[in-house]
Length: 370
DNA sequence: AAAGGGGCCAACCGCGGAGTC
DNA sequence: AGACTCCGCGGTTGGCCCCTT
Image (cartoon, rainbow, N blue to C red; front, top):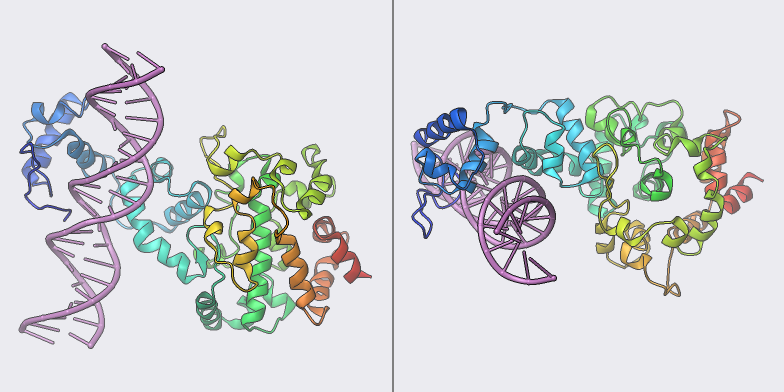
């Protein structure tokens, strides 16, 4: 395994797979002397290796506290949740999984979890539902195989929607919207990472992932998605740090101006620390900017939230996510689609969901509701 | 049974940050 | 302040293994 089997570098130091004898030498030395300096360790331990190779071998394989074997479902869930928050920070993820190394987690992600998410129709980079047509085909197959009547989407069973690619796209757009809001800096002012780890799910498909389907079977389908939002928004008596929300929203409709959001460039392009040693990544995934500009689709919509464009003052050609929403709604020849959602979510009065929607889409909601 | 191909994963590479002089 | 060294991290590689044909 590895590269350059039995090879040696220009200094005559051995590279490639470790032999049992070398392993034993390393274990013996570290057991009695520790590893204060990896640079000097190989010579002192009688190993013809570079210090880096010794460190890697120890930390990834020989360390006594390493847990080997298959990843548990709980570990899988943790990895997925952590990755959705901090991205490819394997060493950070590893600190939350005792006995697992960053290398092991990274390999497991690339060989198992990534594919698993893809097969579930989730983009492993953004942790959002995928929106390409190939995926829609896969998703429809997945849905078809999984008790279609109940499993179309978190909201599908209640809305009794017809299932075709068009509806799936709309459902996904709705989910994307919810997730976008969920991950927007405005909605995450409290930066409580417990929102993301453990009992809170970032993506609405997690029920599929963990096999519980809790969200999919939820009796309040719209709320199922909305519960991912900051509870402050779901609460009619929102906490004080949301007092500017309405004003901010007005600004958003004008082009998603980060100044209005109070978002600095640094927080968009890098990470910022929070007290629990979890970094909240850029809420707008960088891959958004990779979306091709073609016909109207979700990717195009999301591409308007490219962090680079946040800093641009040129808004003449800006096609905001909210305009896309308007277009989507306008494209619906029959408003009953949206009225169904409204009726459903307003059935339990007073519904937090309807107030949420009124806040987000005041014009549209008022028109439909009247 | 043999060959081919893809998956898996240990190990390497290169970069960047931190510390030291 | 700048140069240098060391360490740690994320990305990538490539040999082994297993499955399929």
